[in-house]
Structure formats: structure tokens, C-alpha cells
Length: 258
Ligand SMILES: [Ca+2]
Image (cartoon, rainbow, N blue to C red):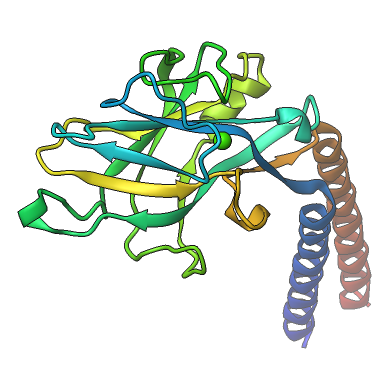
């Protein structure tokens, strides 16, 4: 009989622990973990074949790889990081671009399907302006903490379907948070000068109907203070549960010895 009581107590205790810790974790996630959506503050792209042209006002930009004209194309975007508070811990950062149009296979025209092409995102190390940047006048960038992603299957469009391409840029955004100058990013095909013409066009923040078209950075962060509060809460709850357990045990021992 004592054994049955013991296992019932154990089960109740386990449920209590799971409930208390589960509620705490859920509360923490809802109240302390935030995601900021930062839209592009400037974006532009350039053609290698027209090296002195600026496309800062275009409603799209293309990332292209090709040895033949119009050759390679690269894009540049910047975000205002003031949308993320100082001194927070960045848990995750994701770059998200909405796809307008991808090239599809046409061997006669020397065009390839851009699905699966790997595009890299690199941290810029020099300033630039939206309406001055050109292929001939590009800011430098670093390979450090760069991110890569394959072009997703499917096709985009002005009226949908909604197709996004994402990069995990957590390490790159952490560089900005820890003091690296934020000049924005470069996006380019990691294998430029392809024998076929591969191109993916994305929407920009210019001349598009609304923000759903804009390039964006989704930054998920938590403040160190809320982590301290979480650890303290879990500690106190642990203490509370241990005390309950000890009281139960003592009462049980007393009744068994009667
Ligand atoms: Ca622009």
C-alpha cells in the first residue's frame, strides 16, 4: 500500500515539475523573446556588362551568373539596426527576400533554371549610397561569417505566389551587434561566370505596393536581464518543489513508522 502511495506521489510531483517549468518557459518565450522586423532602408544592384549604371530606384534587383552578356549581377542592401535594442543577445537573424522571377531552362537561348543556385550574403566593410553604387564603384566586403542559401524551387510574381528566399545571417548580424560597422550586405551568386545564364530577381523597397515586397531582416533577441529573471525563477521553483517533496517524504515516513 505504501509503495502505491509512493508512486502516486512521484507521478504527481513529476506532473507538477513539468507544469511549473512548462508554464515558466512558455511565459519567458512570450514575454522576453522578441523578433524585430527590419525593412531595407536602401537597396540596389548592378550589371557587370553596364558597369557605370546605377539601379538604386529599381523595383527589383537581380542576382545573376553568366559569362555572356549581361554577365554577372550583384545586389546590395542595408538595414537600420536601431530597430534592435542595444546590449541584447541575438538568438537568430534571418534575411528574407521576396522572389519576383527566376529564369527557367531554355538551352537555345543559353538560359538555365536558377533553382538550387547558391547565393552568398557578405558583410560590407565600406560605405555606399543607394543612388551612387555601381558595378565599377562597389564597396568592399568580407568573407567572415558569410551565409549561403540555395535558390528555392517554385516561381514568384507581382501578384504571387509568395516565394521567399531565406539566409541564416545570425553570425553576421552578431558582428554588427558587437561593434562592426553596419554598411549592409552584398548578395551574389557564389559561382559567378556560369556557362549558362542563371538569374533570380527579387523585389526591393522602391515602387512596390507595400511592405510585404520589401527585403527584410528578422532578428530574434532576448535581453540579458530577462534571462537572469528566468534562471532565478527556475531556481526558486526548483527549491519550492524540493521542499514540497521533502515534506511529503517526511509525512510518509512518519505514517509508515506508526
Ligand atoms: Ca533601391
